Image (cartoon, rainbow, N blue to C red; front, side, top):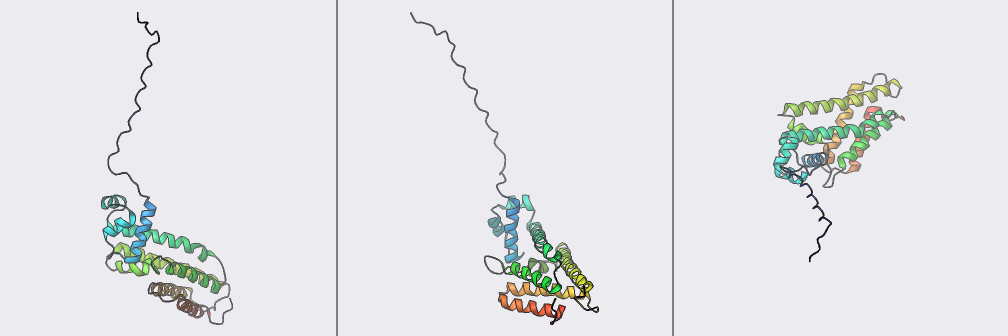
Length: 222
């Protein structure tokens, strides 16, 4: 006679819920890193010479993902330029606000600019505004407005430096802060172009010294 098991069999555990499958391709990229890589590529090759395939490879994103995240090539270029402007503004903000004597102040500003323009894994990168955005500004009113805004910001920052130096008596009463600011900005643009053309740093530093002598006076001890 078979003895019956008084204990009921254990209940089967409910199956774990299966996560629903996601539709479409998940975002595996980091927007800021992707934008930074696009910026480096545009800065190196310019707008026209940079292909969508190159942008796709640099950002690690296929074309549909690029369009979804940044828009078309022009929109991506503008976003990259905005990123460049923001980074440059942040890098120079503290230096422009540091109230050193005018000669020391200019020396420091130009030295930082030179470090930026000479940086780059594949050679000197120069200035995004001067080397590529200024060319696109000829036909694109939006980019032109950004370029002109950048020029104006730089002029105003330099003018504030010269205005303060004049108030402190470091510059003669006849000095025009606006004109001096334009000369300082022109020097920034000059070293950016020459840096991209691989002019040696010592020659660029000589240009800077000469420009500062003109703006502040060769015998200034400030």
